[in-house]
Figure 1 (cartoon, one colour):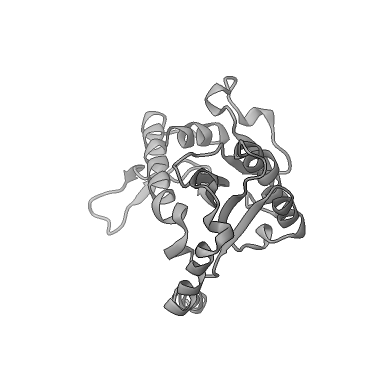
Figure 2: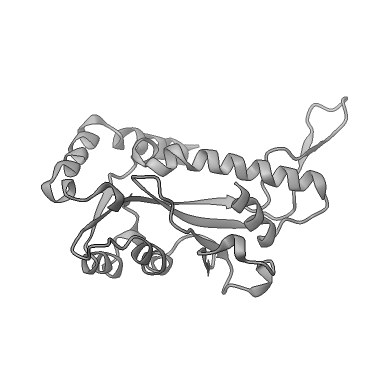
Length: 233
């Protein structure tokens, strides 16, 4: 309980007028003003439990005070990185599975519906310094290259450690990419993807997973079903 209170306090204090107002002044800098809308992007990462649906089967008797909701057996955490431009263009995503390496059996035979997607694996399914750099080099840089190589790009992101490594920032510098970090503990009020996209995306994913559970309620939802439900969402 004490830990939750501490985090909430940091988020409240971080989202103050004194913190947010100066941050918006960066958007008024002449260098940033010259960046075309098509070259402005927002990136964020989030995660989902492979087997956490929204409309699972409820089991229980009327005489009992509580019932249990039946869910698929998989509780593996999978992360993903999404990026959208100011004009609404979504880049291919990077999926981060939990594991030592990416395994062929995780995927269906037909990969056409996942065209352009990138896949990697980490020990706990979370983003690391290496996966952040991998996303930058394999997804962002090639998919957002301006027609005029002299033009700059803008990338608005959280100030996580994986986004502030020397390698990550040097690559951005080399490819004329301005980095604009959101102030700490303000993503719940400033992060566009977190506020406007991920909530609906996760809700749609859980709905798709719930349909799958109803049709085959004995299925242990693995990585193949995660990909299918996420792609539909």
